[in-house]
Length: 315
Image (cartoon, rainbow, N blue to C red):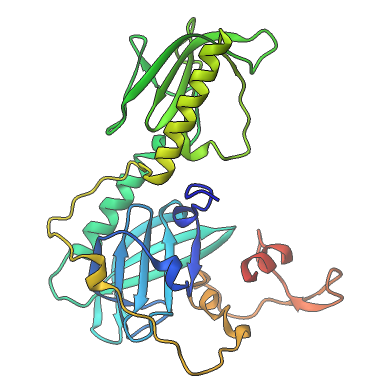
């Protein structure tokens, strides 16, 4: 499996990750407290180009990974911290697999705005760079018959006379092969186009293109495979953000995981979901109803929730 096939970091919310899943690129914020699930627990927040990571300094296996694509809203509000009392906090509301989670962090360094400014700026950079990562149809890709290049993007080949076989009669157009994606547009209508990032090539969407002669087709396939392989080794996600203060190397900040000499009951693993579950308005238990699926009485589910969905969250 290639690096791109295994990519999940920006599209998932996960708790209690392994040391391997916690590995990331440099760029962290020190002295962060997680109030929502571990109020009073001092930890470290890592801000990467794909996700936010927090782990407890006392117990590194207590951690959370929040992908930027799951974030619905980021705000700052006053929160009650066990370590600092009433203080300004960063609230992050997320949605993953139809389930909402809320995370609250405070900065334990007085007067330091890095927690708020860095997270918001990097998330904004992620939101405005989806062209690097998402499959796009009929976008503003072409200007004066030339591809509108993204930052860090370079055109390696331009091929005229390429047929798009998405319709019965086909459409004649032009191919652009770059270090980030493949772009095709119709010669008669620039707005009829498609942008296919290398990140999406291993997906399940199939497109057909015809290039003549066969020798040129084989040459193009070889070039695309080569560029895709290079991209897989060193992806360009398009999220660029420079810290005002240069962070320390990741090796100097990594906390070595210590194997606890205890047996962990796996039944308690879902407590993390309970701690972060965004259901703060619930005042009392819902009325019991009979579930034909389970054959017993259960608490009535909220609108939009299903038993199958709850099982998927736990699995």
